[in-house]
Image (cartoon, rainbow, N blue to C red):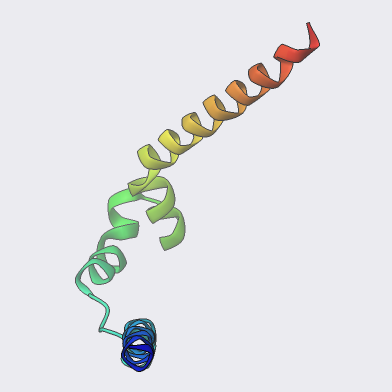
Length: 87
């Protein structure tokens, strides 16, 4: 019974190690369609001076605005909750 349990543990460990290490040894190819689209149309569509600004401010502006609002609300809520003990 102990031998069977040890074999099962070893097989589980080996499967986990293979699942973690296999992508590191043979990574899948990255898709290039989005990259090519951004490089070709980034600056002309947004009018930004460089490609990083085009992607960040032109295409991700709403996403960035949403994240900023969520962060502002979280900080405001934390300040409010921490200030409750001072009354």
